[in-house]
Length: 406
Image (cartoon, rainbow, N blue to C red; front, side, top):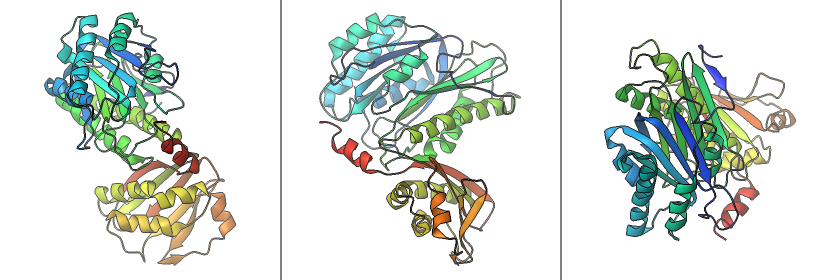
């Protein structure tokens, strides 16, 4: 429980009332049989908010979904894995539109109320639309279909990622995919969130942005921002009760529940990173501004030098300090403090008063052996702080990505 919020580890996008989902293996991927086409549907139209990639190369489904969500409403999602439908020209655009039309026809809703998402290899080949059309007709949707939905959007993920959080009568559920091309900028790879709360549109948009800012915007796997990134929240109001808006007594708990779900999903992405063996949690304290704290924390988990050092259990704190310097955050090196979390608990100081503290190497190395590593940097410039999460960088990551399309 957290502020009256109950975490439901087995919850998904179909845990909130009125949402159903289903999936099928239709052959978008030809390398193995897996679920690769999925549908999510709400019994009632939803107030909907979303954030999308800021990559200037946007996939066709991103462009279509941005257009469809201009009115802040949606009722269904259709998604595929195995093909990003990006850099696919006019045919790719037409395919994304057809996917919305197929789902709209199945559910009897306007295709403009359908969100389209794709993930996989960027560039040709085109989507196998005949197989997708047949699959849409065959997919059965149930309130238990959320786990199949989570599995169907996976590409190089090794485990599905889902969770829900309940407060009073309403619930927030979510699923996410993405373990490569992860350095989110406005969104994550693919994240779908649902709630049976009734939520006012402007407040829903603000709550999503704030949740994404402290979760998906604060993770890094490989410094790449994808062409297909999307984070979406749909609210159908089927739990009953007042519409939640800014200033409503439920506004705080709703925002907190959304943040908890997004943070859990973001950390799950890092834990499942392509080739990864470590989750690196970095907290920056004492920043002059919140933006400085975010920049410094994010730059540390992004740094290839830091990532590879963590793989080798190398307590090279100079790389961490260099990343802080590269971030643009204001600091005076004579006042900066740097700590590793000890496996036994408590923080061990490696750098203070402008110089190393002399902590012996074996003790520092021991801090980097656990699967989850904790780093804390105090900039001693103010009262602002931020936390970021990143994966380490391994030879297996290079192997996987050198063979990605072969």
